[in-house]
Image (cartoon, rainbow, N blue to C red):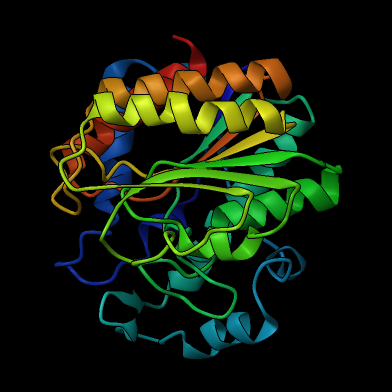
Length: 307
């Protein structure tokens, strides 16, 4: 079985201004690097469907979804906060970004793909039940996780988040839910200034200071993540794949390189092989230096495909 690659044209139409780092060019950079690497022919490309209202309401309130629809501008921008804006295409892009995770879960649970990578935007892991924030409108990974449990009967699930920022929205969605283990590291102190205050037992939060390097991250994955992942024995692993911890990315101050993303992905894959029949669904979160993002996603997908 192949690695499935999901995206949608609307994900390139959402934009928040020419100055904004969370830009459509992020997806272009990924596509360009995948072509140059020679990996694209080995991926099963699929256009992501839109998430249904039912699937979204497993994570978000009806008021939140309706508010996004009501605030959608006919032209120009609607500001959610100083860093998060909607243009006329934002809601469609968000629906397809969330739908990509759902379709990827269906594919790997149904045996149509070994694993999947969703090249989608806007990202999702900061989106809370009633709040869009941090460039995020709908929590893509949380919606995919709920779909896996509700539609496929998954009883033990893991979410791995290696973005430079803490996935506060995902933690809010699953704190205290023993079916879900969430493992993350994140720069601290840093936006969104969460994840360190008495996390629930199913949250493996590892805050790290600025300038933490790949060797230190590998050690925390070995010491903190892997024992908990083994104990969880997940039937499916979802990845919030943010690449803004790369040393070339000015969004954060961590010091990872492509080889570190390869290694982390390989560890996740080994756990998935032992417990989840290899089932991994990875969804793009951050990563704003275009060159570093493209190279890092290639490293990540190369590990998923084992090529």
